[in-house]
Amino acid sequence: MRAVSLCFHDVVAGADFDASGFPGSSPAAYKMRVDEMDRHFEAIESARADKPSKVEDFPGSDDDRQCPLFLTFDDGGVSSATHIADLLEKRGWFGHFFITAGRVGTRAFVSREQVRELRRRGHIIGSHSWSHPTRMAYCEWKQMQEEWTRSVGFLSDLLGQRVETASVPGGYYSARVAEAAAEAGIRFLFNSEPKKRVSQVQGCLVLGRYGLLRGMPPVFAAQLAAANLSRLQLRQYLFWNTKKVLKRIGGRGYLALRQVLLRHRR
Image (cartoon, rainbow, N blue to C red; front, side):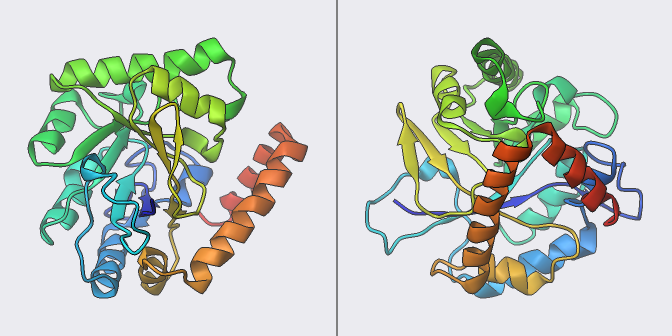
């Protein structure tokens, strides 16, 4: 099975990048202005004959010629409800909004009612963990279980229906992260590995994603959304696997270096 999944984060109307989602220079690198995200959506629309799909309609077929597109939005910033949903719906699209459950109702994040409204409008609501640990794959097993179980339970109670979709915070994925997600009842888990091939861990389908950052030209979104392998998809794959080695060697030192590099993007 194959799928193309794109990972976006928040949008802001002006230059205040702390207005939606997590504050700081590192999260800001992933946040776009409203008109910028709209141009990315226009590019995706021109690159694909089909509309973005909902993961709940997956897995579909083992035929590799089929490669649905999923649009995902991490963190649960307030712009999910105030801007992003409108940008999607004017094209007849639906998105997957992954909510950091412990932040619901706090400054710059969606409220309980906004989560319910997004679901009423047809979007997929999923977990982005409870507290958004920086290095999810390095959490103790008990904490990993709690991150998934607590967030899924909270969101399921809030919506009155079982939440079975999630994304891994921070880009730190391992098979143990998927095993803990599967135990929490998650059927579809998105990570940040830039690949199309869908794998399975204890009945949970694991889907990779291609990431979009502020400042990337819209043509990048079109290339990443392509069903066939593009040069940009390959470049992200090679870069990601290089980062995996650096993360393993550098530990928390890698995070400190990343903060310094991303600070210059603000």
